[in-house]
Image 1 (cartoon, rainbow over the protein chains, first blue to last red):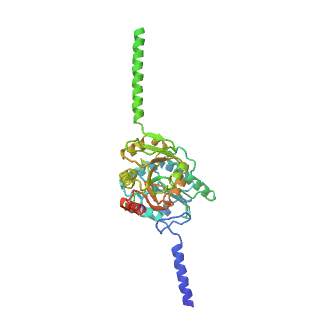
Image 2: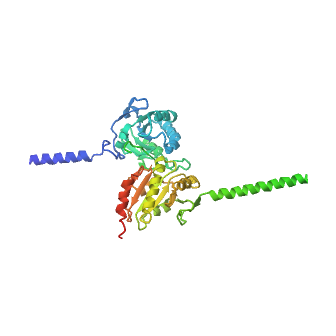
Image 3: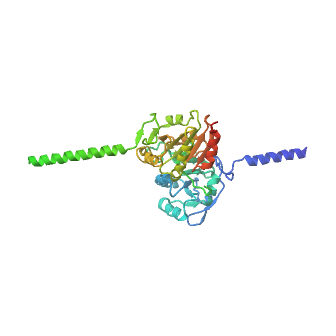
Length: 197
Length: 190
């Protein structure tokens, strides 16, 4: 009898382990999931860890591209949002996962456009882990490393008629202790150029 | 004085005539743009027609009409979109009549006048072409596929019941897509 209970317990424990969402399961890093600390090299080759880079109220991981016209259209807005929320304890961390963009290119583009670090995701391993496929694509992680918002920055890449500031709204709700109304939004952008493609 | 007025008038008339002839020539070269809901697709020798669609028209557009429906989402600013287009034109020729194949441009609506039809004309594309104008990209993306996060190009194949049989974010793999198309379009019995 004890043996049967032990076997059943083991099966349940195994199932629980399999079913609990973790980031290490490839592809679908859903809102509410906790991000394990990670480390990637910056454009100078220096290893940078998420926990060291995040602010007191968390961080935004933004997937970028040096060549994508949609990212170019967003660069000014990204810099402005990063500046506005740096003082409120939310840091920005850029990630470049595009296999088609050289380190020199990414480095000069980062220096030209961003005041926050851009990390190199060689082989798009980190993009695969999070299931990121588009640039620009943002993940807002709170102080406890929990994903609070994922997707588009706002609802108009041309910036001519923005009616929804998804990322700013997520920050503001989170900073004031309210529930984030929209935790997921998609927008048209460039596909991340993966190594296998 | 009278002679000088006469000369000025002649020069003016010639100038206006020149402007008129030039305007006619430029107008004749312009691609045709039609408003949402208007009929007819381009024929082999017709100018490229790009129809502007809003969310409401788009919802109807993505419903198959008795045949498998292949949709390609693209933009002139998207390098891989442009790169794969010759393959898509090839597919259109191969499967014309067996499936419905449409392209949906996600360019800025002002590009409907020149950039979009110019590219389609250069590609000799004959698929019905649309340009989507929407204030809610997220809703549009979700309505097409739960597996699409908005990256382009994006190609999706629905069977005649509207079930997704193939989708690809990034350039299509021609052979894979052909296999799926062949499953939905059995060869005619001789």
